[in-house]
Image (cartoon, rainbow, N blue to C red):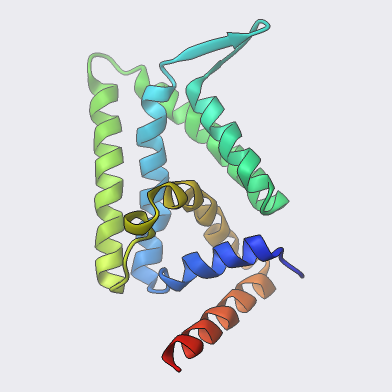
Length: 175
């Protein structure tokens, strides 16, 4: 299986600072939690174009999907399905009475980011968020999907190549 250069560069760069199993686990939980925290208030902004109703969370999902489609069809499609399921959950949480939606959104957002920093402290690697915040926030949901593929044993050859490139890169840096 041949991955595009853009996909391989992103996977290698991300995976290099996400090797420790605890850090990976924290990201697998924390990134969707952060997304949920962002999506809750976005579900409150309804839009309509030509009689078709949607909200800002839908716009976010479609925007991410469009970018991910330039990287990989299957990863993008899985993200799209997961994103719309998450939007449904965000919408339900956002309809809770009083300020519950805001409280849940804030706890998800800040708690998810705190977890990311704890994971990187265990790994002893600098979070990409610190150096490249926009890149980190665009890439993180994609890598959650990628990691799901890895966990279930799909596309093993892609992940083996990523590890080979990380090893090669580290050897070059050490020389």
